[in-house]
Length: 198
Ligand SMILES: Nc1ncnc2c1ncn2[C@@H]1O[C@H](COP(=O)(O)OP(=O)(O)OP(=O)(O)O)[C@@H](O)[C@H]1O
Ligand SMILES: [Mg+2]
Image (cartoon, rainbow, N blue to C red; front, top):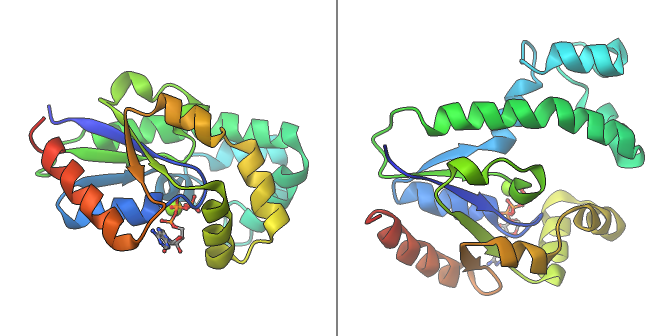
């Protein structure tokens, strides 16, 4: 079977940018953000349990999870955040594993998981984990620029994630995204040529 590798990194580190560069070279990307979105759309597998746990008030008129309301709740309520994650994380993991291990013409698969180390049980079926790294100041600036979140909001998300140092310690491979996009592209090309030979 072809190999599956994990791709992770802190908020705004450049995971999506890196995933796009790899997919342009022919890698298959399994995107857990996309899976999470599908699970909470109308008809999504997570909806019955979300409705049972949080109530019908958290389902919007289209029959999807009310994302705005849920974001507000979990932002201020750690217990609610834990309950939502205990519903979503196992489903995301299961779904991403099924997709990643399904047949493909691509030479290898990358599974992009923002909280790969935090949510556990990815390491045992992934060959190696690639971490996208940049400075915390860059994470903050890039996320604020892209999302229009305030500095305090991004800072609080970063505080809930593993620290940069802890993440780097757990990495098998590090992509350094503290420079220009062209430099990022060169690293991706180099790593791609190694991954197709594994
Ligand atoms: N080397 C770079 N130089 C300048 N801007 C960059 C660089 N890398 C990424 N960016 C920009 O920073 C922002 C965050 O990058 P990206 O969306 O790839 O990160 P991410 O890790 O997927 O973020 P999230 O955790 O929010 O999903 C984007 O607007 C992207 O275009
Ligand atoms: Mg992203």
